[in-house]
Length: 321
Image (cartoon, rainbow, N blue to C red; front, side):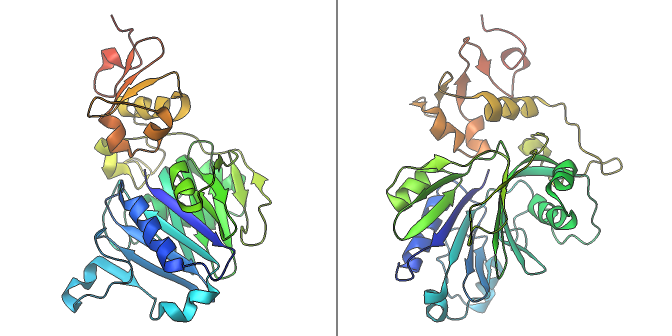
């Protein structure tokens, strides 16, 4: 589960470098596979690295450059023109590479995504094994939301940044929160990140919404949402979304699927959750963890049964003694 912080800039005098660095620090706390920054000014600019310890815009000897990529030559020249910033922290479910690090770029679309998806669509020219590239290509292929939704299974929240617009998509499973102050408006997959950057309370966006251009308006279109189909780290080889037979939806039938399905659809304050240190944690904090961190927690249902992907008798089948 990746982290996204998207910032709509309302005051050109705000310190963008400071905002970017703070946002990077927030997302790489839990996401270790790399980070990326997308900036919309007079053009779309980006910086991305597979090394979370690399500072934003840092210069390195030529032999180190394989761990980052950018088209930013002079940040000060674009500073006052910046309208939108997106910072993405990545936990990989497939490959770790510059191409798979967000933003994923295709035909002047700069795409950042949180979630895990599979697809019915088949493309023979994909550059990575990243499900985000597959999601972007499917999104661009279909001319309406219902057709797109019918081609995808899983869960997703994403931003597609282009020179003139920023598209936003959210389904009923992926979290996306909003808050604002006088200088900026923020969308984030973690409510705590909203509050850290704006010092104001956040609210979660409606389920199953699509906004065509958040730079101009928050007018939204409701859609039917995606078919849920969760999978775990043990199925990373299928994270591109295509099964071994005819590239149809993979039907996993796995305890991990049931585990994450219950987490994302049912877990609330009635569940008792302990982290890997044995301390009880709030369910909202739990839902902001990466899926690897969730697997390390002990989760007790309201009826006293334990939710676990490892033991059938403790999972969705039998009551605790």
